[in-house]
Image (cartoon, rainbow, N blue to C red; front, side):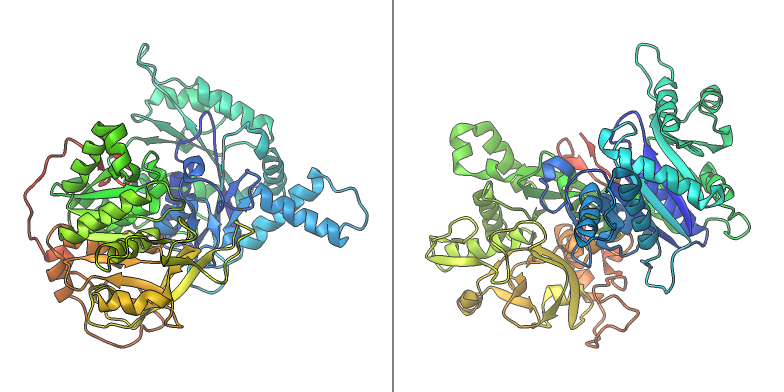
Length: 605
C-alpha cells in the first residue's frame, strides 16, 4: 500500500479536501485504485451532533456514518463508497484506546499518548486503507490521507507524531507528503509573498515531517522566481511545486495538477512510474468546458435555516449543479432564510420580508432541504404552500417533505393545528411523529441512518420514471421523525400520493401531487449519492421541471419494469438523456442577485 498525506498550513479553508480529492482523481486516471481517509482532530466521536454553522453539513454514508463534508468530496470526485471508519477523529481514537484499557488489553501498563494513542492511529490507518471502496475485490493501490486543521494546531499533535512514525515505518518509497500552503499577494506591494509558506514548512519540518510536494494556493500562477525561492528555502525541488490558482470551476483542479505534472512527482516518490500510465481525464476536460459555457439561467430558491453558510447545504448545491449541467442550464441559487418569510418578520423587519418573498416569487423552482428544530418551520410551510398553489416546481428533502405534508393537511384537510410532534408535542393532529425505534435520551448516532430501500407503490409517477422505472431504489437517510402512518389514508383520499414506501409499507418515503407539474417530497437525502455525470433523480426532475424540460425527460426514460441488475445502481439515471436534448426555453431573468454555482463552488454576486 502506498500513502499520500495532504496537510495544510498558514490558514484554514485553503481547499485541502478538494486538493486531496483531485490528487485521487489524477492517480485514478493513471490506472491506480484509490481510497481516502480524513483525519479530524476534534474530540467529537463523529460529526453527527455538530451544528452546520460550526462545521458545515453532516455527510451520511451507506453504513450510516455521519462524517465530515470532505468525505462527500472524496465520494463525488472518485465515485467510491466510503465507510464511517474512513473518517478518523480524536474522539474515536481515544474511545478505542480507553475501551482497550478497560478490557485490560494493555496488561497493566501506563497508557500514554505515545505510544498507545499514536499506535492506535497508525493501526487504524493501515486497517481502513485495506478496505475496498470502489466495488472491486482487494485493497486499493494508493490511500490519500487528509489531515484536517492547520499545522501547529495543538489538537492535531498526536496525529502529527503518529504520521511521523508511520512515514518512517512504511519507508520513503511508500509515503508522499503534499503540503498545501498560501502564497498571498499584498495589494500595497503587488508581488507574491513566500514567507508564510516558508514559516509553515519550517513548522512542519520542526515536527518531524518534510514535504515532498508543495501545492501553493494563490490568485494567479506562481512566477518562476517565486518557485525558485520556495524551492531554495523549503528544500523542495522546483518541479515539485505546483500552483493551485483560482479557476473558473472546481473540476479544473485535477486538470491543473495534471498540466503541472503533479502526478509524475507523486508517482516518482512512490516508485510507481513504471506501473501507472498517463492520466486520461477527457471526461473531466469536457465537463469543465461545458460548465464554463453555460449561460441560460435556472433559478432555484433555497428555503432553509442555515442559509448564512453555504457549506451547510454543500451536497444539495452539488446535486443541483450536477442536474443543471445535465440539462445545460446555468444554476443560480437564491438563498431565502425561511424565517424571513414569516409574519413576525413582516412586522419586525419588513425589508427582509419583502426581499425573501421577492426571491421566492422570482424563482423557477423551490427547494426546501433538511434541518432540525422549529426555527423557520412556518416559513418553509409557506414556501411549500406557494409552490403548491402556483404550480412552481418543488422538492422537499427530509424535513422539507414533512412540512409539505403539514401544509397539505392544514390547507386541504382544514386541520389548522396540523403539526409535527418535533415542534408541538401535544398537537391534536400529529402529521409527523417520532419514530418508535428512536432514542429520546441520546442524540449521537441514534437516528434512522444510512442506506435504506424504498419500493415504488405507484409505477406511473414522475419519481419512478426519473429513477428509470425500477421497482425500488436505495438511498441514504438521516431522520428521527416520520409521516404519521395513521393519517395516510386521509391524506391520500384528499389527493396527496405516497408513491414510495419502505419494505413494511408503513413508512412513507416519497410523495407527489399527481396534478402538479412537479411537487415531490422525499424522506431520504438523495443529494448524498449524486455524482458528476450521474445526477440524482429527484434533483434532475426539479431542474428539468424548472427549465421546461421535464416532459422531454420523462418521455426519454426506459420502460423496463425489471429489477436492476447487479451491475446497475438501482438509482442510476445515466440512461436519461432527454434532459440534454430538451431545450424548451424560459424567458431569461435578471442575474443581479443570487449565487452562481455553475463554477462548482459558488461565486457570490
